[in-house]
Length: 333
Image (cartoon, rainbow, N blue to C red; front, top):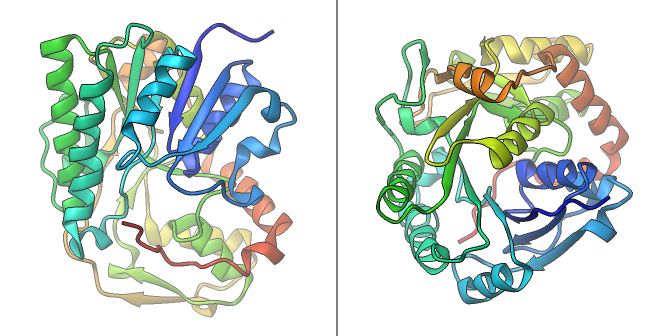
């Protein structure tokens, strides 16, 4: 039975966006996805792994930087009730090269778009999927009301976007909620991210360069747990609120890579080398997720060991195709 709420997922080609669409389809919701690029190949689009996606999902190639009128018309025509925005100019290190691209997409375009849609009555919740990078390097586990201390153009652009959306909520009652997730991983993730990049280098006897010797500390959470949390926030989250989505475990990157090497039956020295730290990289950001757990009865269920095995199985299944894919981030303006 198809449920009444209708979702628009902005950034449907993204790892988190495509997985969230798969979750919506499995939960009997209809949804529309938009992305500025054509749909990716099947191994990178988890919603195509579901049997019902053709009946429950529509894709439109639209760019939020250029096609805002078309997106706005789509929201009105389809009477969209929930918008989940996964789209952003991402990547921390590369944001130093052309920061204006990050500000254009993450601040200017979003502010213009929200101004167009803020009075559409069908919209019940605009979920802004943001980032813990806005806090800068954290000292311990931070809560949702922690001060912003962004340290890179990427983080600054996301902090500015969050502040603008909050002002829209406070001044115009625009129905927005915010999510900030720890480092997300799982099957279907782009190869330039640390976990799939480590796996593909281990499986192909490649070379993984660890910035700063892999000393930074992160908390990794499986995409299935993130999608579960995001849907709860869409449907039951308090408007104007921010929710952290995170495990309560952390790990140094070097220890993570060691764990992956063990799972792949490889020695670290066979495929890993060490490089200098990149400018502005945060040594740690750890998110306290008790608010989400207490208010919406959410809990993470997938351990890092199980999640890494899950991701390895996806990679082995698609290894011939993945060997042909680029392993470095390619910036698109």
